Length: 71
Image 1: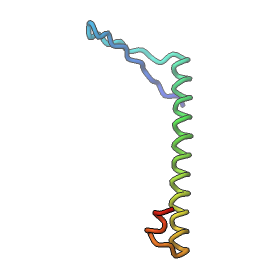
Image 2: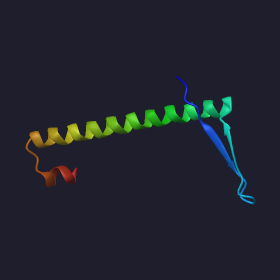
Image 3: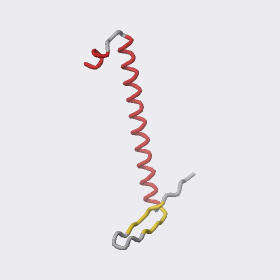
């Protein structure tokens, strides 16, 4: 299912707003940017999960919060 996106062109001199559907090129660019965002978000989530796991393991080894913070 493809979503319909619109571009809005504003003439600042007159205040006139024109609305038109995205071109194929704009739609492809949008999809590329969306995929890049989702990849970066997944990477950030994985990094946060790994950090939380590492901190829990350090605590399980008996390190204090001060010792963990010093690392």
